[in-house]
Image 1 (cartoon, rainbow, N blue to C red):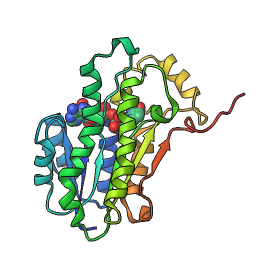
Image 2: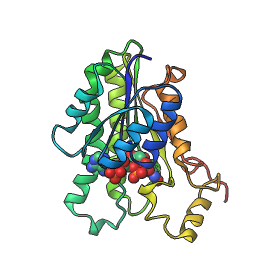
Image 3: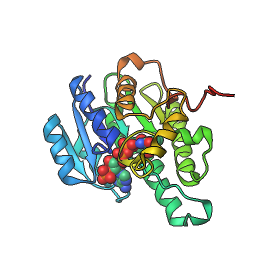
Length: 242
Ligand SMILES: NC(=O)c1ccc[n+]([C@@H]2O[C@H](COP(=O)([O-])OP(=O)(O)OC[C@H]3O[C@@H](n4cnc5c(N)ncnc54)[C@H](OP(=O)(O)O)[C@@H]3O)[C@@H](O)[C@H]2O)c1
């Protein structure tokens, strides 16, 4: 594969696991993140280039595209938030912020990278992250459910618009042990109870997600585009009791 893979949110749980797996499989990487020290250390460990910054900063995605190189084989948008509360407690700013970080950032990242993705000799591949909360409808998920619903719409729209040169797919995880979920999983009893709601009786791991990202980026997934794939222990589709 000629071009690099850009990973947004590379210092996150899923982002860093994905970066390590891709490096082991021989991909060249360009990493982004907000935490300069963590990003620099990861980039050094993996022999990657990097750009530090916040996706809500104007011009950040253009800077990433400039620094990532002229040809890109893929882009992974692993940036995300989770703010769970009852509807009356959400401010307009909360909703807008979740939309900006999860959905708008994903669109701007691909927009900025488009010329380089188009230059890849093989079809390039984009991977977004949705959430099981889009198909399932969980209480207190109004803001993230709405923002990730937009990511699913973006996945299908861009998959149609950018075919056949660029494939676009999304992964919809259920609760996965990373920094994002740390607040929800701080209490072990709660964590065990939530794990038990999954037919496969455990929470997700970053490795569960990274394996699918690597598959979607590679040529084995060369006939897949416009898909939203649940990696969720069966939670989105199965009922094992009753
Ligand atoms: N973990 C789950 O249960 C779960 C469930 C469903 C969907 N997802 C999705 O999976 C993806 C990866 O999440 P994760 O579990 O790996 O979470 P994570 O460990 O918290 O990683 C999220 C990453 O997003 C970055 N980020 C957040 N706001 C940002 C901003 N404004 N600008 C730039 N970067 C920003 C974080 O940067 P910092 O390191 O600087 O904070 C971090 O690197 C996300 O899209 C998330 O929504 C996760």
